[in-house]
Length: 260
Image (cartoon, rainbow, N blue to C red; front, side, top):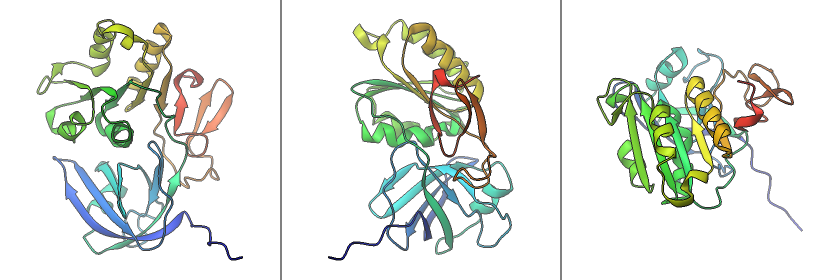
């Protein structure tokens, strides 16, 4: 009896879209040239950031969408790697490793999602998979950085927006708005599990808020990664059970396990 060959997590892919989404964000869509493993919400990929070896190291990106044969990644241009990636054109071929890391545990019913800036990239597939189940709290520095807010709004029960400068939604941090709204959510909604991705100060605040209310809370952490497969130990974080690798034991952690 013959058996199918195992699908490799390292593969080549062709860029079919690398388009701007606001001033500093881009959406990259690729078509793998070989079979791939289907990702789960919260997992990530290591992407070659150029069609050369400069920069040498791949960069980690959350899976934003897996549609048909395409994989999509939402990223912000903020360094040499992402700048190089932003310059790649349709038809360019790059090497990718993934899906990597763990995923968000499936919510058993309604849940609260908290996204800060490009953190929406990690939560978007969770909102898609559980459409109509989430209350989304989405914060950014200004309206230009609220990428895919409209599309996200179609996937959730309700969306609350806050910006630091007040150019969209409530003025202030999204965590302040979340704290205010948690007590006002109807019925048992104040007991819903929380899923969050964004800047570390935001995650810390969300984790503290969840702890105070006895809510289960899962956070997706961002760290610099060199290998993405747990070999280089470059993405260690401190947890209550010792040092753990964000790329291997994460990127999703129970918020109470992280030593903030």
